[in-house]
Image 1 (tube, rainbow, N blue to C red):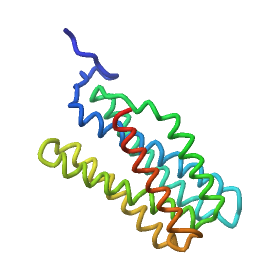
Image 2 (cartoon, rainbow, N blue to C red; image 1 turned 180 degrees about the horizontal axis):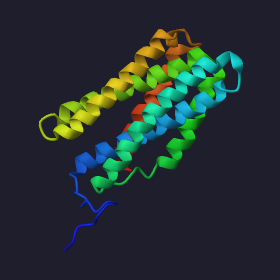
Image 3 (spheres, one colour; image 1 turned 90 degrees about the horizontal axis):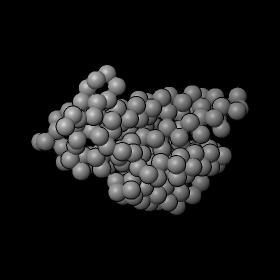
Length: 187
């Protein structure tokens, strides 16, 4: 039996179920990050006063898009599927981006800090899990984790913790991220 091929003629490899789960959830997370940053940058881009943060968020969106592009390729290479919940995550992430941007710059930064704190821990677990079994995937997770940490630290430096209702806002966002991770792994 001939194995399916991807564009360019390279055979697909069928990854282990756990690797497929990792790729599925990471794809969903990067998809959501792009949607959040895109929505925030558009809201802030509407005013001259907030052009600086709009540019910063657009830059972070572009970095997240690079991650998403990598996971799109990895899903294909590993014969894995994206989460069936991707449409829901698009709506939720866009809403989160718009909502936190409308609350102001500090709330947008609090959103980044909350999301990236969950995601970097998630990547750290995946790094530990793959370090002895898949060095290439481990390197990808490591690079992306470093980018997420940089976004997190920038958000803290920009005043995330000064956002109105910071403890409640970030607790809700973190809980939502952890729930999305668990659901995206399986569905």
